[in-house]
Structure formats: structure tokens, C-alpha cells
Image (cartoon, rainbow, N blue to C red):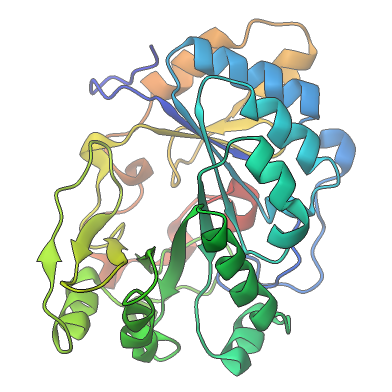
Length: 326
């Protein structure tokens, strides 16, 4: 069992496969020209599998693969199939561009849930946000997943003045489609030009939805980061991840392993623990894992307070989102 000093048991591991991505979303990776981590410094497939087994032996029940864009990694199939043999729930977060070609691998690995990052339902705005003209490809791949009975969750980062006007459109999508829309409050990371006036809060999202629909709360599962809701008559549902205005730290069970093998005990943690170097040196990484999680702050990495309006993102010490893995 892996626990912190506040009694929170950690049984969910997020593994970033790469900091590379075929999109250039400003809130995640702002620069078109970006120095990606050299392949030699990334965890290799056998290393990922061995390290994952160490976590599994300590009670980890769920592993999520992230990036960057995890499916652009050349050996992604080998990694996914290897992890798929472990007795854990394996899920993935992707931008959806490579679903069609990777679908046989996802099915063979037993992946039953895929999260798709999609911040707009407008092709022109999609190009503006991602700097890539592949909107229709992503939409087609969402339909492909549904056809194969894979559960789909859509991650939509809501930004005031950019896509908050599309909240109703996303909810309309759930009327005849069994998808969950996950509205995410815009969070500050290195280089993403976060300001409080761009953030659309939990209360604002709910108020917007309630202007058009009857909204009923859904009981959350243990350790849920999202507050879930349903709309009568809709096949799908929606949820809100309110990290900034109503954080869920008291029940957090998540650990993050970056593509270069650093363990972060919180999305906003200042420090990180180098597991990969220790692993390559033949050291036992379990004491490092337990020490890292035991030192976890009570909330938000000890860096963010409740008054986000006065937050100066320049005072935060953290990586960019793409190098953390979300």
C-alpha cells in the first residue's frame, strides 16, 4: 500500500509516455518550436512495464497513459500491449488523431475507456486552438470508438471568451450519444499564459447548463476528481473538474510518472523524485516511491490557495502541462 501522511491511499498511477505531441495547444504546449526529451532519457518499454509492476504490487489498480500525445510514440503499441497483460484497469487520454490505426491494439489490450481531449466542436476554432486541421478526423474517431463499445469521455478545458459559448453544444452532443463531457477549469502551468479572467468556474459552467436543461447531480464514486451530473432524456452525461474553485484533494489517490521517469505526487507539486535513474542504477525504487507520496502536501502541491483571483502564475514552481502528462 502507498499512502501519504494524511491517510490517503494511492492506487491510481498516470504514466506519461512522451512529451511529444502532434498538436500545439497554447494552454498545454505554447511554443511551436519545442525541444522534446531525447529518446534516451525517456523510459523504455521494459522499464515502464517493470516500474508499473512495482506500483501494482503495492496496490495500484488503475493506470492511465498520457502524454504529450501517447499514441505518437513509435513503440506505443508495445507498451500498451505489455501493460494490458497486468491485472489492472488500463485507460488512456489522447487527442484522438491516431485512434483508427491504433484501435486493434486498444482492443487487444482490453482498454474499455478512452478520454479524448477536445475543446471545441467548431472546425475553425479547433484549428485556432491546436494549430492543426484535423477536427473531422478526431470526430470520426470518436464515432469509431463508440461503434466498438468503448466508453468515451470528452475532456473540454473551458476558457472564457474562447469556448465557453459552446457549453450547450457539448451538452447537446450527449442527447443521443453515450458519452460523458468533462468540463475542466483552466489551470495555471509554466508557459500557458493563465490569467484568472480566462477561467470559467464550476458555478459558471453549471449556471450555463441550467439555463437550457434540467440538471440532476449524480453520486460520485470514491476518489472521483469530477463532479458528475445527468440530464433526463440524455444518453450521455457531463461532469466538471473544478481544480481551481472546488478542489478534490481530500480524496486524491493519484500519482504521476513523467515520460522521463520522475514521480510527481501532485499535479502542482514543486518537487519530483527521479525513479528512472535509480532504476537504471539497479536500486530499489520502492522506498523512493513511498517517501515521495508520504511527503505529499495536503492540497494543490502547497502552492495554490482558495483565492484564485489573486493568483500570480509566475510565482508557481512547476513544469509545463505537456511535460507532466496531465
